[in-house]
Amino acid sequence: MHPVEIRPNIFWVGVNDRSTNLFEGLWPIQEVGVTYNAYLIKDEKNALIDMSKDIFTDDFVQELSDLIDLKDLDYIIVNHMEPDHTSSLCRLRELAPNAKFLGMQKAISMMNDFYSLTENTEVVKHEDTLSLGKHTLKFLYTPGVHWPETMMTYVPEEKLLFTCDAFGQFGVLDGCIFDDECQNMAFFEKEALRYYSNIIAGFSRNVLMALDKIAAYPISILAPSHGIIWRKDPTRIINLYRTWAGYAQGPAEPGITVLYGSMYRNTERALDQTLQVIGQRKIPIEVFNVSITDPSFYLPSLLTKQGVLVACPTYERAMFPAMVRALDMAGIKGITHKVAAYFGSYAWSGGALEAFNGYAERLSWEVVGTHQFAGSAKENDLQQIQQIAQKLVERTMKP
Ligand code: FEO
Image (tube, rainbow, N blue to C red):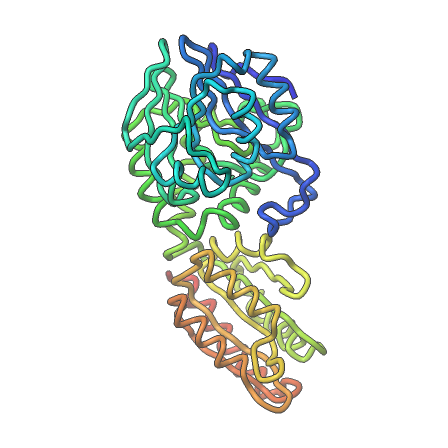
């Protein structure tokens, strides 16, 4: 792609990744892709903000070389050390021998850990400033958004904040890079939520602290390192982040995420009959079969809805393995303080119910009811399950 001047002498230098199937080796992006954005500021001193992923280094270097002789690069600002932004570092070190790598203390030690880089590095601290000439860089420490070394870089002269992972989205850029050029903002907001719930949500407490920090600075442009640049309405995504980060600790929106798994449709039949009852209550419900749905796609629902209905059988004295994966991921991503219920079938012994109660306790989920049944659900079982589901609806509608 070609560089784009986003403000005078400040350039977007990004690449579209349409070839990676799993972001972080986990999250499906084969249908939407992702971008790695970096930014070049040309001034008396030249600075590069963030880098790119190794498999795109050739494209990235070409974009930079269209703008500058890399030997004239003075600083490389490392907002975040995750390799989607830094695995081109070794090549840049060779091509830009006069550039100094700047980052928080933890980032500098990670540069050694990941790339054996120990020279030409410099630690910056929260609210340190660096003059490039006409532009100033101010470094804001925002640990946990996404890793503990992460910072953002602010340019006061332009009210421009380089935010790395924060406010980013999955999805490639099909010809435009700004929110005001984009004809499909609903797609980017949906992918911003998926990115938040998949990548950032486990650090929601840190997100709230970071939002408080950046609130002290006027912002005209938010320039993340994934996806579109927010210049028409940066407060839109800032407000969404505050909402989503709050949901991680509850309460969230009225609504129920149904996670289910079923081996021979005994649990699934009971679920269908239960949904026929609670479906009349006009409460938003999203249903996911955890056996065939990647967690990437139900985490947004789990994060944003207050209720969780877990329906799965016991599997060899334990919880159905696909549900174990789902609830483990909910724990990793800090999906706490939900209102929840469980039901499911067993053949000769229970196990899933005990496991569910353990998850609920660890995640601070309030359990409104549980029921397990041998084999297929009988009329009495269905009545109990539907009573529990009605209770879940009531409780979810009153956070
Ligand atoms: Fe885009 Fe946490 O890396």
